Image 1 (cartoon, rainbow, N blue to C red):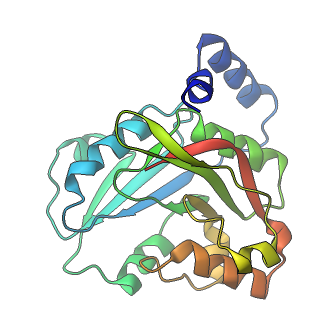
Image 2: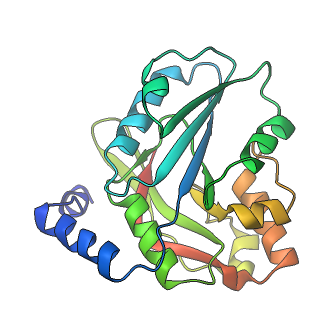
Length: 219
């Protein structure tokens, strides 16, 4: 698995092809807004998440961090793609209201310490351009101890019966802001992705749920 991951790393030829695809084959450049609710003790893991986002090939994103603490780093003031939102308490309703106010196209929840592969957001945007009916997408992921990567989870296409038996879609997930608003938000603090999928399949078709077949995230 370590060897496989090594060959997934981008090289100059990959980035040239990706740039050409963006310019010649895309009809839209989706904007991703990621939200991170930082609990006490998560501060030490935040840097690795920000570093992985800074290394993204596709730059059309924003990260908002919710925290009880004041902003610890002036980088949040210097970069338009980063926002620090200090709260008096971590309340699901309040966080959901901030998410509702986003002006981006897609939203997603990410945890402190999560790291996206360099091509992650590009790959998601690529799929969104070709799967125009998708309004929600989940991704593969693995774990890391800082030195090695292990326990990869390569996930199947969405099937409601499988999902009810085992919630295999756990991990990083994105949903369109429009769908989030139609659902009147959801509890972003408690198994958000699981409950979101239940809401989507109850009120809409499971055909709007897609999966990105490439490895994307580790935590």
